[in-house]
Length: 54
Image (cartoon, rainbow, N blue to C red; front, side, top):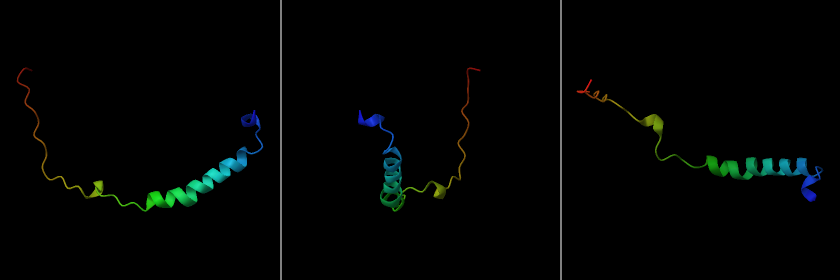
């Protein structure tokens, strides 16, 4: 069974990490958020509910 041979594990994990950090991560970081949550302005407070049965 080749999956039980631990010799190539380190090189495979290193190659996977380099692939993620050099190829996939810059593509993900290049996206711009269309709905920036930091720009939300809330000026009105919601009115509390009246509970007539209490």
